[in-house]
Structures are given as C-alpha cells and as structure tokens.
Length: 382
Length: 125
Image (cartoon, rainbow over all chains, first blue to last red; front, side, top):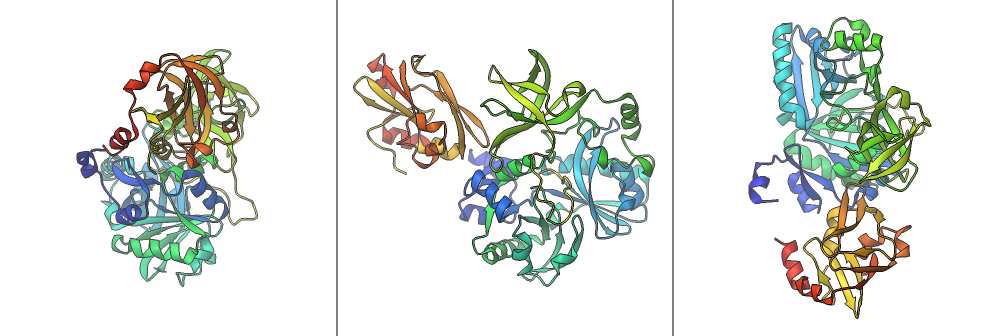
C-alpha cells in the first residue's frame, strides 16, 4: 500500500493498539482495519471454544429521535420496531422501494421515541443520506450520524460473559439475547448489547472513543489467555459458518429480503413500509431464486463470484465461500433457482474452469448448542 | 525470517532449490504470511510439464486463492505427498516445504531469478 492510500483511510481509536499488537492491517470499506492477528484459523477456533475480541468501531451508528421517531423507523425498516421494548434490539433490512437491500442493520430502541441503527461501514454515508431524506418526508424526527461518538468492541465466545463480568457491576445474566443495558466496563460508561456476528453468545460494547483502549486492554487482561484479539478475517469465516448474511456478498441492491431467506425480518402486519408493496407482489407470485447453503463434495473451495451450474448450464452465483476452520469443510452460499434449493440437491461450482460437485445443505452450517442461552438470530453485517 | 541463500526466488514469491537437473519449488515466507492459513494446494500430476512464468497450480488459504507460477520450465517428477493432509506445513516451514520437484529443461532460465538479497529487497518495497 502506498502512503497516499494509507493517508486517506480512516482509523479507529484502537488503531495504534492493533499496530502495536502485530495485527495485519488492510483497507476495508474506507478504513484501515485488522484482518488477522494470530491467524484466521486460530482466531476462529478461539471464538468457538473460548473467546475473541473484535474492533468493529468502523460500523456506523445513526440515531433517530423525536415525536415521530417510531413512525420514521417503521417506514424505513423492514422489521416491526413497535415490537421492541426500550432496551431491546432487532435485525432488519433497510430496503429500497423494490424490496432489495440498501443495507442490513440492527435497530436499538434506546427510549420510546429514540432509536439507534447500527449499519455497515461501507454503507454508512449512503444510509444516512437515504434515511435523512425519508425521515424528512415521514415527519417529526431528527436524524443524527453519531458514528464518531462510539468505538464498538465485540467480545464473542463461550467465555465472553465470565470475562466481561469481571470488569463490570452490571449483572450480565440479566441481559437477554438481543437486549442491551448501560453501565461501566473498566470504569468507562458504556452500552452493553448481547448481540454479535459470530454465531456465538457474546456482547457488543459501545464505548466512548477515548476509553476504547482501556476497555480493550482490560478485556484481554481479564481473559488471562482465554480472550485473543481477532480480525475481520475470522469475523467473516465465523459469520459464514453461522450463515449470517454479509452485505455486498449475500445481499445487496439486487436481491430482495425474500430471496435472501430473510422473510422473518419482514413486519408484514405493521402497515406500510418502503419495499412492502414489491415484496408482497413477490410473495404472492413466488420467488424464482433463493439463497442456499452448499457444501463441496469434491476437493475445492468456492469463492464469491464463482458460477453455479447444473447439468452444464449456468444457474447461479456463489455469494460467499470458504473453508471453515471449525467445521473443516468447504462451504458457501449461492443464489440458485428455487427448483434447485432443496437440501440434498446436487449442483456444480465452476472452480477456475472445473465443474466441482457440491450439495445443497440446510442453513446454518453451524449453530451453537441449544443448551446455550437464547435463540440463534442472524445479526448485522460488517 | 531470513531468506536462505541456497534458494533462488521470483518476484511472484516462489522459491526454487536447484541441485543438478532436479529443482524443488515452494513459496516464500513472505507469500505464506500474506496468504494466511493454507488449507489446500492444487498441483499438477507427475509427468506434466510446466513453463517458466506460467501458472502451474493454485494455493488456497482460508481467505483467498492464489496462483502458483513456475520459476523455471520442466517436467514434474514428484508432488509433495504430505501436503494433501498437512497444507499448514507451508505456513510453518515455508522454505523447507517443497510442493513439486521438477526436472528442469533449460538451466539458463536460472539466470533471470532473484537471489536472496534481491528478493528480500522486493518484499520491503
């Protein structure tokens, strides 16, 4: 990377810490972010078996407040925000009038008339422009881009709760899955959200930027070797094992919420919202293609953009694919015709000119044990 | 990790160890570090010929796939049998883990390869 390119990238409050800890840094969505520390496999396994720490401060936060806030959120979000109690969060689509994705997001209800949307870094500016425009039309609410007010640190994995609990007086047992609370962590005033993007139990902590390093170091030390820093590489393999959609790969402005298998994020009963009409039409007509999971039957790793074929004919495209470190299988997701979407269906992936056999399998590839707390709910993207 | 002086290198980050008309080919420490955890290597069968500067296989890490380019031309005489089950050897011992052995067809091609100091230079460019 040239110095000029580096100079134009944004950095998080933990940038110096990543550098000092030997992380490999890469440009990502306009930010210079750690892609790996000790290695993707090592980090991935740590999150599945102990815990991992992620800097996701690049993600955007957009707040909507005022008398008309609920009405505004109901209009722009695919999900039903009226179902949220104060202190609760939900996954949703930010949809175009065509029912396709401008972005995916988590919607937090901070107060009766105050919501915070956590959105993908790459889309934050586009989202803010879109939301501001829509809210202006919808009525009495203010939209604020509050991204710079928060560093966001995720601690994920079976040991996450015990480690975080050492640094806070908040009883973490009281925070249910997809709820959040306020308190102090390592003497920093924070918001603790029981959410994540790894398929494990864990927390995402909204921290004042000047306290981010203190919280980060506190968690590493409290972990006594059970918590290791992780980069975006492991975040991607973890979310893929858990079949969480990644914006730009699995969903975008050309794919609808129904095609993406995200029917459960659509609040059909809440009344009108942007995209509803087209989604309803599509639902009545029936979708023609859908996002499926697949597993390679022959040696080879499918990657984003590879062509899916059936009987020699092109039928779709791979949206995400890797060799997953925990399951130790080559898996991926792809859009295919509904007729080829039943688990067990054989398809071929064109891997650099060679038709390589694969089989449609149910999603997710990985689901943490049901003895763990709370249901598995897909979270937002990177 | 210092680059061994008994190896020759390419700007595509392969190394070659030439002894007589047989040469071992692998990837450098710099390459494995850039790739991250290697999970899969696709190599030509013995008997196939490879051509200097052209792709002869691919190497996949968790995060990406990368092509392998032949430092010199020749016929593949052996493929490292350990790599099928232990591709991670490429990460742990990159300069000892050869991928293919080749009977080189044109020894003069060695003249255009880099020595360890020259290669070290391009990894810091």
